Image (cartoon, rainbow over all chains, first blue to last red; front, side, top):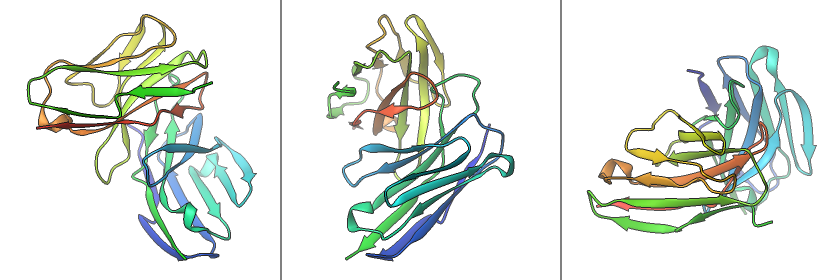
Length: 110
Length: 110
């Protein structure tokens, strides 16, 4: 099956710092989503981004489908950004079949 | 809209007991899925459904049954719980590729 690798596995920042999270995938995909799992366990949709670039406030994401990777940028990080960031992809053979990466654990210190 | 709801939030079972995890969505989404999340790992797909009356297996289906008699509901059944099924279970729904997740059910099997 498709492989999804995220890096780095752990990231520790001071409040106000910027960061880049990476997601590599092994096959062509029709869907790529970024999620934030907050400390209470809730999965929050950040971006649906099978290709191109999107921005939402301090967060932005870029997917280069031809090179099979996606990047999530967090600028001016805040303590509320702490949690686990997951990348998930869908081959497109059927909707609702996401394959997740292992996640990046982000800790933002005040 | 309540979005995707899951009950119960927490459950403790003894080995061999059975139970049903409930999932409901009020967004008229065709696609629904169940995932499990084990410590330090991303989510893994258990079963999914592309519409009422249609279900299929995901990556880790053993020990779980599903059915989908209505668009709104997609229950997950554990027929004979085992300690290996201790996990956090997430239900998701979507109309196409973008998927939305419920708050999760934390299950412990002793």
